[in-house]
Length: 161
Image 1 (tube, rainbow, N blue to C red):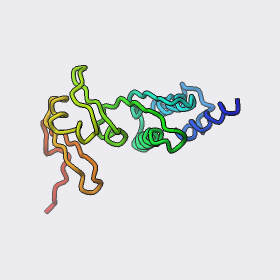
Image 2 (cartoon, rainbow, N blue to C red):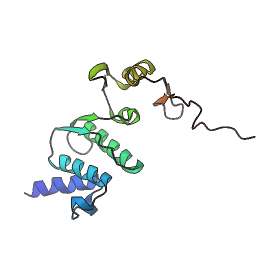
Image 3 (cartoon, helix red, strand yellow):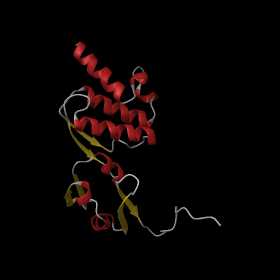
Image 4 (cartoon, rainbow, N blue to C red):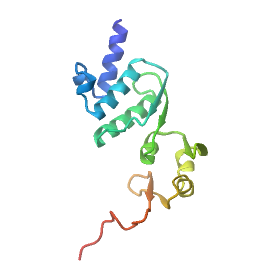
């Protein structure tokens, strides 16, 4: 129907796949396949979407765009609000999109609630069995998760003499 075609066109547009609509799935990159699956979900115009690692295989630009799209869907910016459940292993991504989190460890719930209550240094250290610092980024005001690991000085910017 015309409404179906409009939903498909909209889904292709918001996922950045409109210019690839005529290509076979076998011709798409891993990230393009991820976006095609998301477009297929959106085209159904459902009130609930469940996503498993939707940013997997995507470059930085499309990771950000997919996270923004998920947030827009939940906020109802493009139509009516959609209940979105997302499985993410990247805690920074979870911080960007979640109203509420469920932190699992060993198949059991360790903590639930708003991100700032769930993603504490204690909870993350318990879940992943590594030391972690959690702070607030002074520029953005967002939580910043810093896993310490065995090489705490790696990646630090050092002053040069």
